[in-house]
Image (cartoon, rainbow, N blue to C red; front, side, top):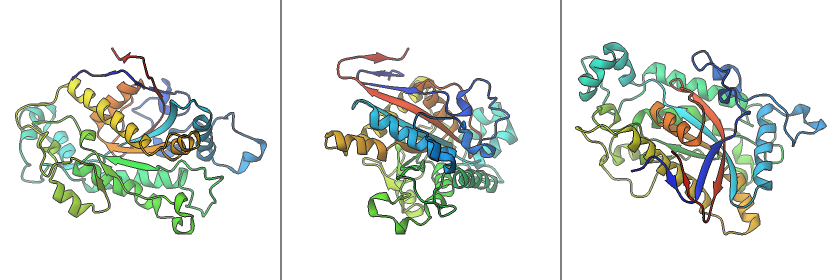
Length: 335
């Protein structure tokens, strides 16, 4: 599997909107929760003198909608909320035993005398980390926190959610976003309501193989513990991708990330009837996307979309504005 070779699609990062885009921002000291997820409070071409009452995120959301409304049919813009799961019991064990002992011995086991890390669950600290992200979302983005109106339908709240099938991500997504979508939606028209119904995507999982923390639980277990989640078609009962003897290579992991991004973007586009009005509506309704996944998978996503290296802390969220362009007769190869 080649890392990236698509003949009809390109995905690129648009910089200048988030502090994490800037080379002057140090990932080791940056705290997204103290600066509205990193959104730069800047002006946009869609601003007007009457916008003093609008929050920075509301103005940004309106600008993204404008980009989509005025773009060619084959171009669209999306904000990806790349979320890392909170601390899991495997992270505790890695810290306890060190990298070498973990990779060579402990990661191959189900756990030790103090914890189990096979398909690791969140620790109490991990839940708190996810809750911190949730509170940041509610303060910065949630249009219902102070019973505010939606300005012409403008909101940067995620419209679609995707999540890795590993337990630590399933739980993180619920802690981070379920409460964000529990505002006064019932009072809105049906087509303006938000729903927390994440889609479980097999390929959003972490670098795979050998480590028992990266072996997912059964489909039945996921359905029992997360009944509100939607499991993608073709999702097997047992984990057929995990191998006890072979660790996934960097190339294969990156290639898998390319596949899942393509799959998600095509899935979001599939509901359009092709008319200009429907295409425009579809772009607006799929402009803000949440992906709850893992540190390694986020690293690969950033590589694929051309974003600078930016490690995400456990439970953290990295927003990125991307441009997606489709081609009919052009081959795009990433070297």
